[in-house]
Length: 193
Image (cartoon, rainbow, N blue to C red; front, side, top):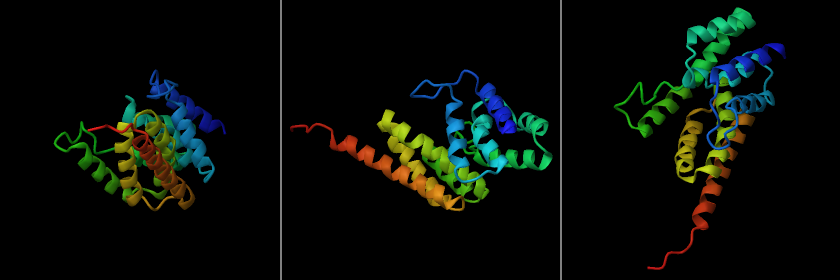
């Protein structure tokens, strides 16, 4: 679909030289993967657009106003408005910059509580985001993987209103990630006292 290709290009330009942490591939591979997962469950253009844009407000200099202006140039107003609302739902509010007095665990808990009342379609996109990140992180960084899996579990406990098939896939991805982490632990050499 032409509008989604334009939005993909916008997201790619917004992310610029950013790379995926472990693979060093251009960052856009992640939003495209998230969109493709969502596409298996919905053909709603604002949802697919939000999947492509889900990290733009959080990880790039693009502002909500700039994003909305761009969306209005490629979509009708109701679709542009819905896309922006979904992207805002998917953008972390409880960041270290916004809440320096809170530790990561408290910020992530508040984020999970916020996402519990997010639009069900935003939750659906978040499921796809978790799926695409989970095994990749666990495979490449077991220490952060433990934290990420805990945070993902917390999110899934709170976000239960999205597409139930994709929700189940996200739960399965987290469960699989836990098995991988247990495998790391099981494969540690015995230490003789």
